[in-house]
Length: 94
Ligand SMILES: [Zn+2]
Image (tube, rainbow, N blue to C red; front, side):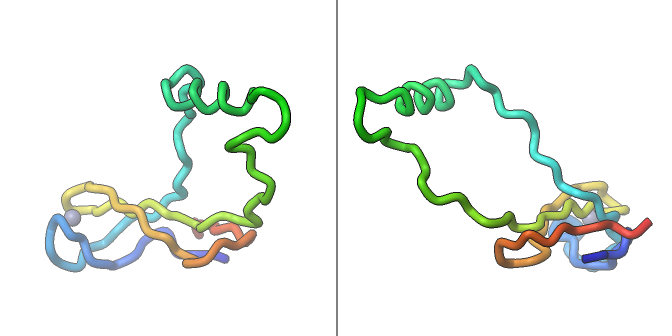
């Protein structure tokens, strides 16, 4: 699915419609030594038998998120473009 590189949409910071630049969202790298991650990895080790926290069902796709950057205040907002989980990928037209 292709979307245009520039959109006119509502900016909650300017409180009006402004031009926005569209870019792909890429999540940052997860810290492997963060407290929650260490705790979760220890949980997966388990004590034999069933492993608590281990997922048996894998999700089939992801929600496609884009980042909109306002041209006036240069604040960013994220928007889910396809509302359901899909395998379709978003392309930004250049
Ligand atoms: Zn703005």
